[in-house]
Image 1: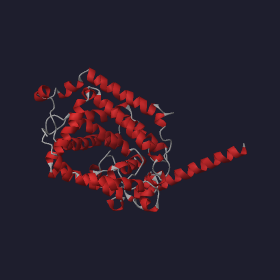
Image 2: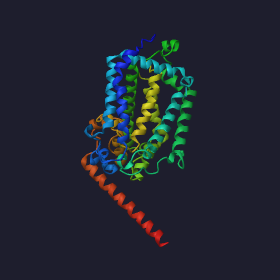
Image 3: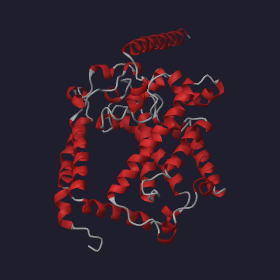
Image 4: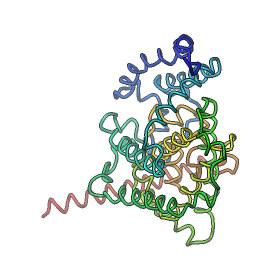
Length: 384
């Protein structure tokens, strides 16, 4: 009550979000049960081999679960606009809980949070085939190839990136590079702390941070593919090993398969973005949520799935999601955004029908060669 939080308006304004949860629980169960009605959520073209997949132009074929989640977003936005005091009270409560945890004040908290989110989201996307039918939701219409190996026989795919990142951030703090590059926080923040954020500030800083991260990495990503400097392009080649050697959609662990320079560019762009805010100082709660959101979107875009709750389904035409990014990894010269679509459309880096046709044929040839090799191997084993 001292914060101006009113129980009554909260019940009224946020009621649409609360009530939507009930049908969503039922819809989610039906959505992930393989059936003809569920398969219809994506046009037939989207169920073609990886290289022929196109980003859906409209959400007309999206399943009911997608519609419900979109309605929830609209409901939350409408509630925040109609009753900003309620939304601010929610942000204040979240900040109070966040600030009360001692570990959130540690200098390594944000790095540890990012690594924890990578582990959680990679594990989620690489084990979801145990719950949903991969023939329906995988971009190549088949079961994932070698899922969860980053947690077992190929442990270095997760352990090495995590230790390298945490070690680099530790050195960054030890050398006080943050203060050297960006200076100390404003005097009022040092004297009185960051203060309680409003809902509008958190949403603005979070949205702006995700947009700028993707926008600022775009020219670097484009240069990794377009510059004639072979050594520079080679720095990004490791991230494309799966797409160039496997005729299968990606697994989420490929998100963190990068050279040190490639990963370093992304990390320093993220650090830079974390120091940008219309308020002059990005609030710690916004910074933490930014890390969670960016890591989720990165893992999602490399997941190899087309699920109803993904960004390109919830915000069609705005986010490319794993559909667009899988095209990038399979074709190499299209869709250089990690999250969005706008720059690729402006610069003409979206795939054409002819490109899709050629890559469809290439994939068919690769698949036929692999089938022939398997048949020959099976025949040789029978002879022996």
